[in-house]
Picture 1 (tube, rainbow, N blue to C red):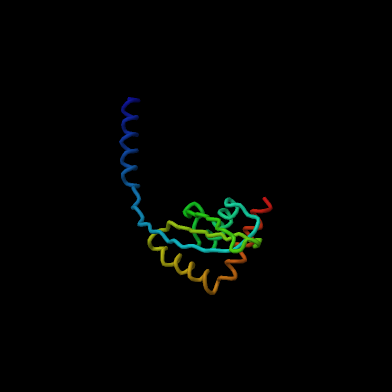
Picture 2: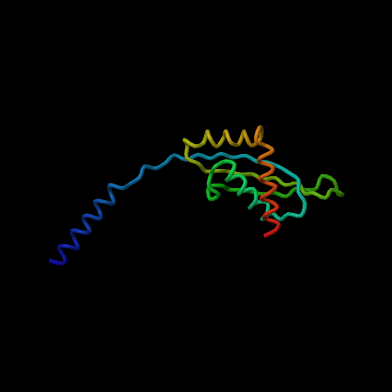
Length: 129
């Protein structure tokens, strides 16, 4: 009798499993890059600050962002600031892609000052950690 009950539970569990299969979402990638000058930063600090700023600005999870940071040569030997380039790629569901792309355009245009202020604040937070 106990064995019969166990088999029924297994059968019920298998039936439930087959009814809860979720559809696979179509994902796409939105990518871009930016450059700026700053002094006294490490690649890890720039990466963390850029990722936090992009996640907030674009409305995507930080886990869905890949950020690559490159420290360039100083434009002039006497220059105090380093040239930084940040390339990013956000993995988003296809239906969210246009909204994310619109946020990228806004951050480079009308929202540029807001984006730069957020990035500056996040860079300062990284330095003081």
